Image (cartoon, rainbow, N blue to C red; front, side, top):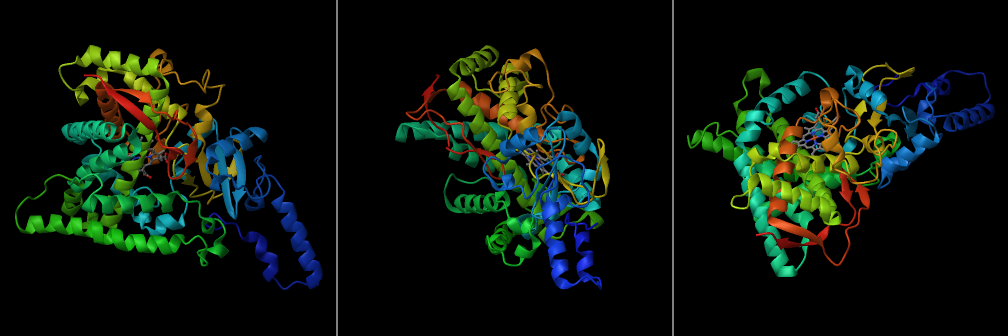
Length: 505
Ligand code: HEM
């Protein structure tokens, strides 16, 4: 079995010295390919069948709502617990059921990520999210758990988070004053980018100016490349042609990122030489302080730092945009959350991190939005089997890409009553953990590759939501918010939220 997820064993008879005449051999090949193509799971499952699934090549992953298309397919093949399918030569399984999903995510066999050309070209295989399972990955997880995502770190950055929230509130007020309408996405994106930049680089930037503008451009280009469905990942022969231009664009971007992040690392080094500030405490300092065998090369450091900015920025901004859209669409729920904030905080001071634990309804709104609009409906970048492994009654060959359709699970009426209704109250009645132990709702994944930034993400989303609701009443603009989705690197709103605000004080 090959390790790339592609099974070429069917080619053996092409190369053996055979007494079969060439026309007959060609016919045999066509018949065999036809048989494999139209068998359950399609071509890539030719030699390991038994799992139900669609024949042929599934094109759903290249569409804008892959999670919905896969859900439909799983149901029509009565394969909700496990479905097999092929995309080019890549073998896939997808589970849309909590028990099987748990089995996959917690299995040590599924500890690798699939091979993705753009991630490799952008050097992300040297960062945590795409690093192969092993000592290097384990080391990165340990370092970031201790220095970036620990409860102490998260609470130490509370004041900074609050100040960025206040800045976003002023930005919203300015936009409302100048144009009578607020496009929240831009404000949230910049706030979120600055928040991560401060923890990682110890630096913040101005909205839409100078270096801030340049950074936004680099991040945007990276999102697009990583979020793109690249046919070369599944049809290796197309790889060298680079028909979608992914490799060319990645190379250009990597050169720019190297200069941008390299300069920041250089500034940190110079500060140390000048004795200005040593070990100030941002993540660059942490990486520079690593000792001997833990020490990262500059190229690895750039990959690690760049990934954090990527992963930390869009997920948080996109989730908050969905939440605020729901607030505009459900004024009764919005006003209930504001009443809760007023009763805990009053109207003489601004909300802070320490108030959040006393705001269970606000936390339920976040959970309900994660249920209805999970930023990673297919749990981001999937997993890849390191070796053959049993899932339920089936043997999954090494190299198979495994996905969990979290969106399908959170919209399954056998699991959730009225799954298409936005009802935060359901979490007031039952306290469901969203951190990975309960697969009915695991928007941050589960198992060894669970999202390491989940606590930081929730702390940020809770605080900024409380600040936005405390400051304004959110109402629709002339355009009623549209809930259409578009799956890129994360599940975005196809049409950004445009709304109006009325100051509450
Ligand atoms: C609402 C916000 C977020 C959501 C919904 C989210 C979701 C996810 C999901 C579903 C995964 C894959 C988990 C799995 O395979 O089981 C993941 C991985 C990851 N996330 Fe997050 N994430 C969020 C915020 C963040 C933040 C703020 C950071 C860091 C600043 C971050 C860093 C990462 C990294 C580095 C990985 C890869 C972990 C590994 O492969 O070992 N995430 N995230």
